[in-house]
Image 1 (tube, rainbow, N blue to C red):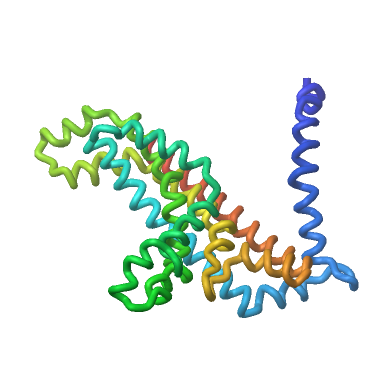
Image 2: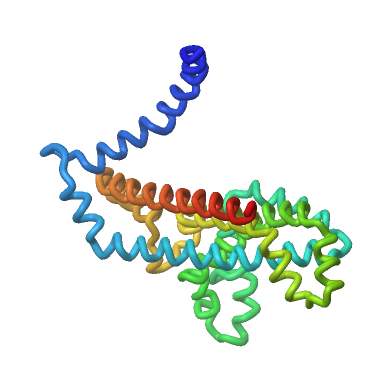
Length: 276
């Protein structure tokens, strides 16, 4: 029976090895093996460089800021859709589902058409500011990237939170209100604890995706905002430095795996806390 179980897993393990483990192995070899053999010196030089430190700082700042804002906006939108229903709320949910299928670079492109140097909003603000480049300057910096990522990734938080609301018993809300709890108190004491798993799931997914976001960064062309994915692209495509790109890619992968491990640990601890 044991051999039969292994035989059933063999095709899956084979596909996994070819599509994931083999490329990862080649990347690790390219990162730590040079003409003189295995060495950590090239990787150490790249990791200790100011360029890598700046890219790592930008990556973490953008990802954390975008995730926090996505959590806040997604939670508020979910509250409005469930606790303050309006005509067409169901249609909004279907639009959110369709929105998840769009590629991220389309959002960056749409924001450029609105807020770019020749964008619609920029043209409207030009009489007030007198300089269209000044009106569009924020779009090509840190907050422009955050705006694009929040616009695109908020539905990734909103969808699990909306699903969490479906499992929330309305009787709990009515009971809390009947006991004299204020609306803010109901949200703080009943809604948020019940939605913690959904918020954690959406926030964890959002953080992982924003850490590795490339399409938005490439389309936005933000000045002086280089992230790890952009640095990998520059090393590999523009400089043909595949060893350096592999080193940065390994570091980016380790960070992503660490974030995923922390997310799984937090989810397990939260499940144990809720069960207790």
